[in-house]
Length: 112
Image 1 (cartoon, rainbow, N blue to C red):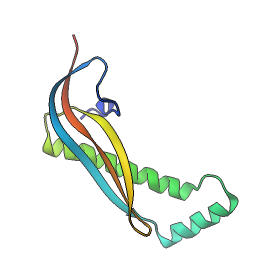
Image 2: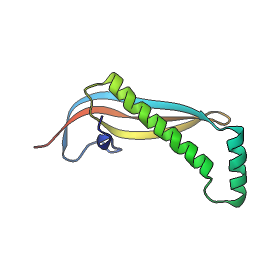
Image 3: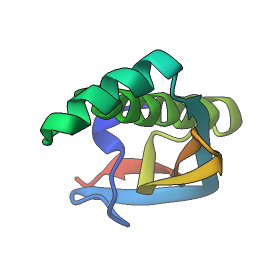
Image 4: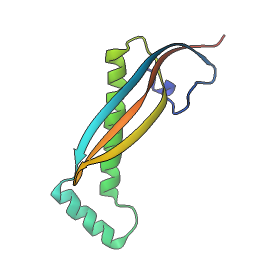
């Protein structure tokens, strides 16, 4: 899977969609540690970016993204692009968050 061919748009400029394979997704579930919550609590006293949570969110999104690519490779080995990629997040329980990354796996070829 070429990461340059993963996009939030429904098409790729300069490419023809040859085949649609359907939905692919990657999911991760993360929790905050007690120590992380304490550190974030101290950061929130001073306001601004709470870097501990920023790093946690970025790591969760990257994991979900990587899992989506792996799901595409496992389920649709001929796919070389993912269109309409999105993220979503839900709180499963207090302090436990699910992050999902999903899109439509397709095979594209460059226009000649």
